[in-house]
Every structure is written in structure tokens, then in C-alpha cells.
Length: 77
Image (tube, helix red, strand yellow):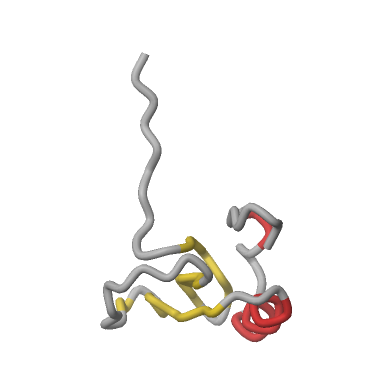
């Protein structure tokens, strides 16, 4: 985690769940698995700014996002 708390997806995707968990803990993040091998887990909808949400497939991180839910940014010109 950098000082602004921005999650850079490319720093996490491809790590094993164990590697990602160790990295998260060493950087002061809480974490949870929200999806494993295409199966979504029940999760609370509380917002925690210092929590990472991992999507995992075959024990590898395929997606990561912070906070409550992933949002796409759309720019309108």
C-alpha cells in the first residue's frame, strides 16, 4: 500500500493467495476472499478502507479491489 491507499491491481494479480495474504498483512491491510474459482462468497457490505477484496482462481489472485465493491470509472467528455 502506498501512502494514499491506492490499490494497484498489477501488483497483486498473479500472486498466490498465500503470497497476497502475507503481502497484505505486511502492508497493514485486512483482506478477504470474495470469490474463489468462480464461486462468490457471502460477505458483509460494510465499508473498510483498509481492506482488500480478492478474487481467486486456482489459488492465484485474478482481481483485487479495496473498499466495499469494485466500481468502474467512466469518463464522459
